[in-house]
Length: 139
Image (cartoon, rainbow, N blue to C red; front, side, top):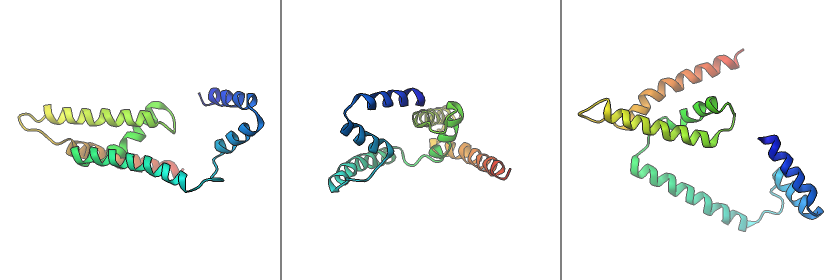
């Protein structure tokens, strides 16, 4: 996929005028040249919206332990990719939903909070993952 999109980008760069191609190439390489305070204002608005969304979700559900720590490694293994943002989000949603369902059904008539279940299952997985990564890096 990366090669295909790179080819499309390269083709587009060859079809535009030299000034636009130069600007696009600088952007593709990543550059802060020409950035000003208005750019900071724009990105601040996006960051604030993200913080408000995360804060709102946490305010409603509370902090759910270990989901962020285990979703990305699981998603990387499933997607067989080092960057799997969408897969991580889907794995996180599936983990929380499954843990909530299991907490409601498996412990009837009472209900186990989802954060307890994700902590009980996530902590050992995270420790296993850290020891596995440590043994791989020592090789």
